[in-house]
Image (cartoon, rainbow, N blue to C red; front, side, top):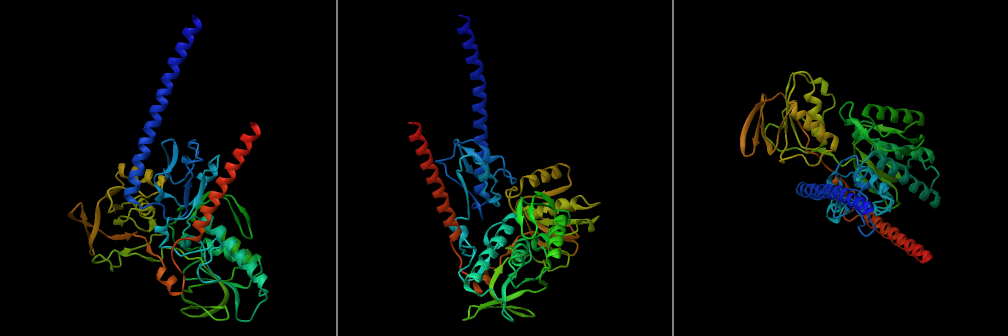
Length: 464
């Protein structure tokens, strides 16, 4: 009798905790579905590299949902992992690494997104033979991805040159010309030095690319990566200044062959297979060309009256140079939010952030928490559902939920993204459309799934 009573009590206690657990799961799934609906409202989906989940292999452990630095990109729905905020994904790939059964493969954008991206082979080659694209312009964010692509791309080029017997120097012709000195361009340049290639790197602005344009002390997320002429770089988070100092140290040690303030205007390939690259001031010839450009290109303007005023800017570097000012920041992405917070914490500044949507939906998790805290502390006045209508010398006019509102103003920063250099790419013959890399990644994912299935069947047969 005592045994029966003990079993009944254990069953009651177990049922109590099980009900609580199931209730918790139900609440989490409801939250995930709500997040997915919100993500669908604010975005068409992943814009670059993102996880593809094979639900046939997903065991519902949830490990992938907790490792992403960008927040709730993945969640559990119906006992399976699902993408709920794909627009936040920038290709860390940690979810794929965390999956114990290999049910996640990293792939590129959907065909609709890829239609606006240059078509590339798995070797990062464009539709023009020996013309390559690496880094953000090819659809992948993250410094880690850029560094890896720069290294791999130059390996491919060096192999071709050696195979064709054209590795010997030819007067007036470089083995390789690299356009852009950001993370991808720096990595490619260092790899070219390792391969002893005759190369040159051109940069229209300053060494560091997009990173050099970040606000001062901005934290840069990265991952352990094999850096040419240095080895394993293990730091996972550091400031912009520290990253630039690291690159400067490696480049000085490597005798970096770069020319800055060289904006490339045209690239043509001759009948002899040699490219002629024309800048505003010079012409260069090379057997292979790597485009390591960013996607932001020229800052996108709003077309608002008064936008040509000197007080209207599109990039913030030194937030502490502005104090006791009335400031408007326009935009709802990470750059806008970070700029607004940086300016809001300077002495005497009154900062207004204008965003056309009803809520933030595409910013990093840490920025979402920080901006929420700044709003609660009344450090920033956020106007959702708003758009600038006019900028004057002393004020700005905004349309907020259909009503006009004028506020005093000294400076305006606009973060509306940039116009990618697609016209330039089309001009030099680069084709656009579905990525061969995405197709290749899909084939690899299917092959991996088939191998796992065969392994499972073999184990079942052996145990039988």
